[in-house]
Amino acid sequence: MSRVEVRNLWKEYGDQVVLERISMDVAPHSFVSLVGPSGCGKSTFLRMLLSQETPTRGTILVDGQPLANEPQPDRGVVFQKYSVFPHLTAVENVALGLEFERAPVTGRLFGRARRAALDEAGALLEGVGLAAARGKYPAQLSGGMQQRLAIAQALARKPRILLLDEPFGALDPGIRADIHDLMLSVWWDTRMTVFMVSHDLREAFYLGTRVVAFDRPTEKDAARFGARITFDIALDPAAPIKERLREAEHGTATDDLGEELAAMAAQADRDDPAPAPSTRRDDPAPRDGETA
Amino acid sequence: MTRLVNRHPDRPTRLLLAMLPFALLIAAYAIGSDMRLAENPNDKLLPSFTALGDAITRMAFTPDKRTGDYLLWVDTVASLTRIAGGVAIATVFGLLVGVSVGLLPYARATLGGFLSAVAMIPPLAILPILFILFGLGELSKFVLVFAGIGPFIARDIAMRVAELPTEQIVKAQTLGASTWQICTRVVLPQMWPRLMDSVRLSLGAAWLFLIAAEAVASQDGLGYRIFLVRRYLAMDVILPYVAWITLLAFSFDWLLRVLQARLFPWFAPEGASR
Image 1 (tube, each protein chain N blue to C red):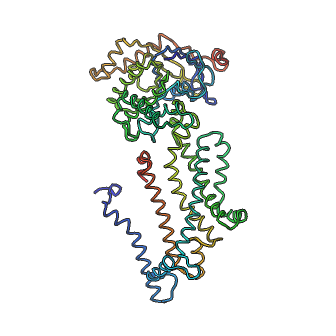
Image 2: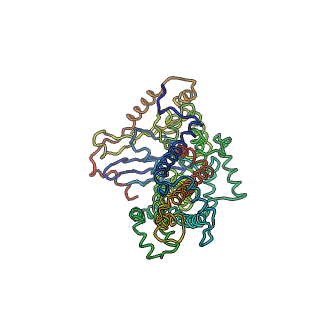
Image 3: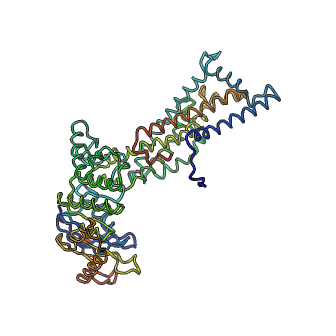
């Protein structure tokens, strides 16, 4: 449960501007869905939140403190793939974080300490519905089970922020609905602040308390213009659209909500117009975060 | 009509087919040997199976008249000691250097290019240097085997480490792992089966370098014996020795494969096709 402030963030690779002028204040215990077309930089943004990459300009503050310059256990992560370690069983995967914490030199616990860690890990596995799979290797688990395992593993160190990079993108719809529910209850119980990159608008609206879209202001000259936030919608969990998504998620309603969500996004775009694309390098505005 | 790519032999057929090339080779040898011996009973090039059997009995089960040793076993022990020593040093070296280069940007920047260059040195070309530096004794043979396969294993492991998904390394950091912990709990355990593959692939080369070293300067060993009896055109000794070396090499390969499957079950899905 952390407040996250993003101040005028830019990311450039050489001449290519990927993101520009990204600013947002995220209240503690928010669930922020990040959406946008492929290549718009939403995953780059997530990697900066993770400290896997550093911003070219601007700062990210967590509870008022600048981010550490490398990944730390205060921020957990679930990737779409390769989140779990293939050489460890499910329970060992979850216990690994505890072993890192309690055995700095060997990275490995023995005897009673190991049994205690495995018990804790087992409890976490039970929480994500994997109690029966505790002795299995990831390769023996289905895609959905692997992602459940990745969630349990990320929870072991009790992160205050959880970062999800298209975690459910490769799963079947039915399995997705179950894991969405799990994600919501985990988010609720742990009071974490969650950032989720998603390709799926419905998923983004269903899970998020806030939906943030990234896009480039213009198609031409794409390298010189980075993506910005094009809409930013706060969603009340009691909003009618949530109720209808909930019904759709569990198959009791069949109407397609996609167009409606797109319309909502378009509406948000009009309500909260992004600044018009201005001249480039001579623009003084984006530079004020540089010295922070 | 099922496509050829979809037709699979059943188990007995598979066994039969696997033995077929061996049977053909032996048959071709028998025919060739018979033809040559019919023309000239003293022909030494393709000795009969009886002659081969006599040679095996003489080398393996009869004490040598001069030294009282059973030559095949003395040669085998000498060669295996050398190859085991060389391979062991190369493996330890390859693992340490490979993991460092694959995992640590500073080690990669320092050693990456050097390792690629060193791996290109033809080991046999430096054999004279080794003999000059380390003498004609056992040490130069260990060093040749090591120099021949050590850089290969190190480069292979470095590549395997670099192939680990970045996600794993990042994930470990979000679980609080230090560099050392990433190394011991994430990277090394995943390298053991790959190291076994790497050693398996380099065993052929290791035998090559061993036999070369023994051929040039040695008092015993399988390679030494082959090159010694070559002077007498003693094909009846050379052929069983070659078959014996092949059998030894094949057994190690098989043993490593079985050990890998047994010790690292999680690796099996990836390695199953091999």
